[in-house]
Image 1: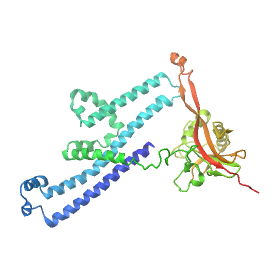
Image 2: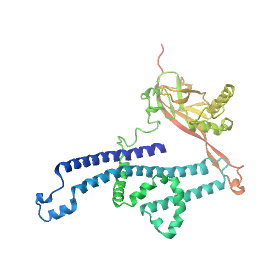
Image 3: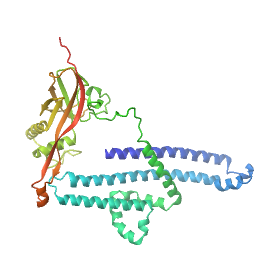
Length: 401
């Protein structure tokens, strides 16, 4: 999602810049053609009187100067647009680093101690302090670099943040803007306009105070991504889980559960024996890892499916289905997932709510003994039952007679 947000913002900036560039370049071509036909502005021929004649001569000046300014603006627009895209990437890179430190030091530590918390907090404080210094230096156009004492304090942060913000890629463009008055003026004129554009594209038309097109399915809302017969476009995928239709007419119900990294991580949390020494997920070459034998794969797959069933449960209203049996499959859009079938002949006709639950380890907690002894042996793993999907449907069994 972070990559998607950066891509959308960068695309919006580039589209705005390209449209503005086409308009300015068209104006430049028109002015250039007019200059070829008509020559320079002849204020004597216009015969304007005071105060208009001296005012217009001073403000407009030579027509060639006007053409040159248009050329400068057109040339600067492309450099400015990509510079702002790099600024956006830098901002989200720092956010990603802070999120990664928080995850590693506060969330994803099995043997978490006070030291992990202290180290994580110090790293976050250092990065936040560095962000503030970088922001001050940016707004003041290099004030910290010009002060002898502050320059020595700021330099280590500047050196580190040149890598965190990827500024070593676009730093020459920045300083080229800062040492040019015209470029600096264009930068500070268009920068707030870009912010307004980014803010403007966040507006959407809402038809209700309580419902929107982006809600997850619940007791009061049915998202079409949770019903297989509603998936008409090839680029639409199931979110979390799905059933065949919003109206069920059979005495059984097929449930599709989306496969994702979070699901497999949950299985590894409850069965560490399934976690491989080398994670093969992602883009990997077949030449650089040892393939398991079919017998070993079948044995581990059986244990994998048993763990999958053990951490899942399904409820329809008050009717509970513990440890449903799954099989791995793909839907019509080639989306990976697991399918199980549950009997529903006991249901009454009418509206029902299907809820899917999953056991997840949400972290580890230090008890009072651990805090005193600073030992990881007394740490308590926190397990929670998470309702990861709710799907409403109507059940009307067809008369087979």
